[in-house]
Image 1 (spheres, rainbow, N blue to C red):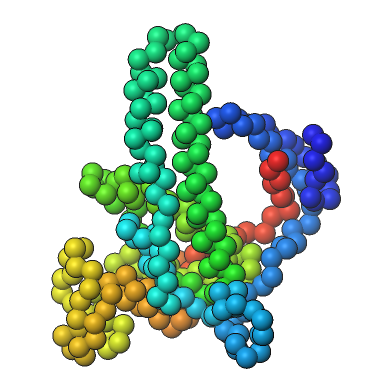
Image 2: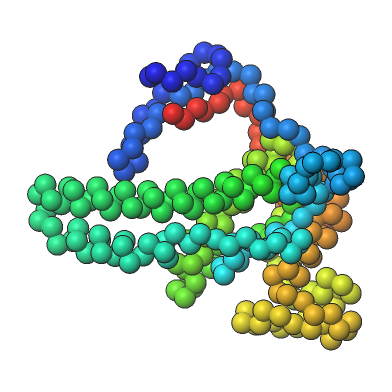
Length: 280
């Protein structure tokens, strides 16, 4: 290996793996676990105190994040982050390579070449999705100390044959995993709302709750106060309000049994370990 290690310590092991046409090595080093990321602040910064710094780079306190299919994430600030949808974009190419592979004779050199091309395309789709999720989660944990999200039933959503492909293409579980450990590294917290919390059906202004709100309805007017809500933005605002009002600390796990009364639970805090994995 020609690359110098970024961590000083004793090398314990090295695992070599292959993804499509690329070779990777993961090196385990026994070293001190010092996070290189700056710690998140509890309170939002004053724009007058930080001159020359863009608003997106400042810590803004708390935010609610509503995940969706048409857009990857909608923030309580009104920002909409579109998803790359790499599987949908490259589905035609993927189908052509799959058909070509099925037509090749087993054991032939052409089949090996076709299999390698298909594996390379699958790896490209994975990398595009992973890159978008890393950029989004890094931006959120850098800008906000407290982040409120929903406890989505991804396994149940995938069972819907009309939504399965779109849900899997977004990577909701990977989003939550990255958001949890990155927030813990910066000293922030992720508050996960209860799975049955009516974030979309509750008015963020007066708290009125609708009896029903079909998925096809994207905008609705509150019958109590008359406020007009965008479905996703309203849900994100409710998640932010729930995260702010929640008194559960980020390092505590969800309670079990009848004793748990809170409607929100913090994501699991990252456990401190003395091993750092370096990928080259």
